[in-house]
Length: 597
Image 1 (cartoon, one colour):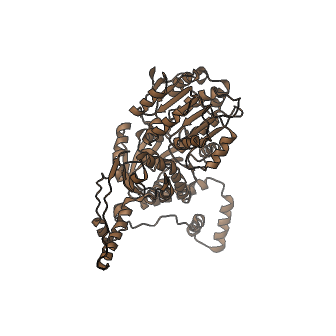
Image 2 (cartoon, helix red, strand yellow):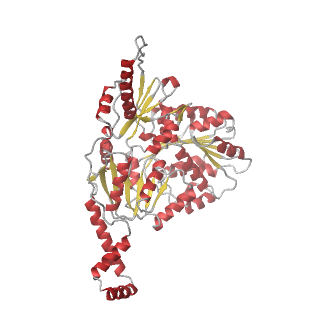
Image 3 (cartoon, helix red, strand yellow):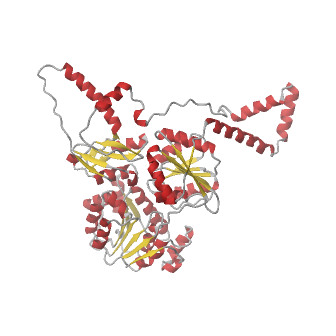
């Protein structure tokens, strides 16, 4: 059975949900069910297996969480009854928090997220304590099953969330392994944005007579949102500088800034806060209570700038957001549409600004084709532009203050002029300086160095010459636009597969697998293409991350090549000075397995 659905006119009360869940969703502000919720909830309440094809942000979490909670047994022990598999730890945390929100009127319900990167002992203690709902990433769930710490005997419901993402990250074999370990599984729900052949194969193999629902996506942008693009050359620091200038030149109320990883939310929030803006980060590590408090502060004006990941900003609805800034370009047009949909709401005019690296122009064109709207390119505000705005803002402060009761200060200044015979203009200038403090009102004109591509910077002429002499016997395609190549110290001889690399990067550094490009696996190392301008903090985190039993020790390939150039020059010097009869070094050639991810 399959059907397509476009619009919804039902209410939650008509779907057959119990009163305690209707009460919760009413308190959460849900008014009408989304199409995926309207279609899926009745079938799941009837115990049917379901396959849902719907894009991110369509409300699919509630589509499976609400009917599962409606049928959950709250008596008879704290055995796991429900298992939800998610591709990333951020999504696992978010789904677990949603279950917790929906079940707050149920007593003795425990929900446990289990994922890589967290101490095993924490999860072991919670499993021993008991819980009814497990939300986890495939790798960590498998670990607990093997340890015997996760018992599968009482699990009757399984949800595969974002199945196509699990396929992309190389988890599909793990998912099948877990499915084979569920002897008493009675209901399975599979959700996926796309339906590749491998996903359909799993659905046909493990889901008996499923109901298939396809929700048509609407990739449309609001006419009330003015879209602009800004070309930003250079790495993270250069983009932060550009962001600072944009914030100075724009007149905004609330601003939502999107980045790719939760590590970047914190790092960027620190830098923007240092400029004097009331800023905070919103990511998957933030507890639901703190998230709600943060959103309330944004609504009330106590916070003006929120820096978030795509997942953390789902469902965010704050009318005063006047600007959405894409600090990192999304590699998915649907994500872009969802991002800029956070502004221009309730009939208000909104502004969307997209930072684009020269290597990312192809994605810009894809966004324009998908939205059927031209993104107007803007120029980076100059120092003169910013100074003009600062002067006007200072004058506006004077005008606003003059509207208040200044009688006390008028008498004070009048007495001062009478006593000192000072010029009134000079007195006003002195007071302005006093009000401004030590921070200059105007920015100093900066002398910009001529731009050099990132790969040519900080390379001395002799070092660049040495680098060009380094040769490789492994022919690889160059990175796609917006990506640069990195080397990982693990390869074929260590049993590494592309899915291992994708899973490690996505889970340990919280980088969406959509932003991971071509992977090439050689005998003793591998290369992977990641977004251009990755922050050093993210790279340092990945260096310590493990693939199997090995640390990744990731580094930019061009840095590695430059180091090899230096090593080559040194080895030639040693060869010239070596003693006669010294053995010659053997040359080895690695074979490559190239995999496009």
